Length: 172
Image (cartoon, rainbow, N blue to C red; front, side):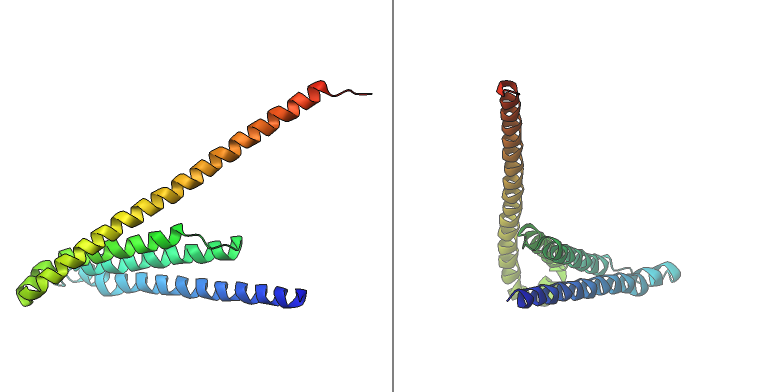
């Protein structure tokens, strides 16, 4: 049974390493793509249209990949699943969608006026998700801070108790 659990652990570690490497390659490829397809043509050819929204969209995806890599690293090193990185990835995703909708809203309104209500409804839902995720991240960080403070107080109390014991101990 012990050998099976050890093999399971090695397999899980290999999987996380593979996931991390794949995410790193994807993030680097997306960055190279931004440079090659968006930035370099703009620098070398003044007539090339600069699409800041496309660059921002790709960079937010790279940022999401980076956060997922962070989750993978935590899972590999600490053997636990942390919830805060998931909320950060969700937050980046929501912000990305809000930016895209608002930046392209004029084009959407011109093409499909009837869809404007749907886009506004989506923005409301995304706004609510944004508030919920920020609140969740805040609560998780506050909980971690409270735990740290509690541990520090326990350490101080334990240290004080040890000092009192040394005072009253009889040495022979």
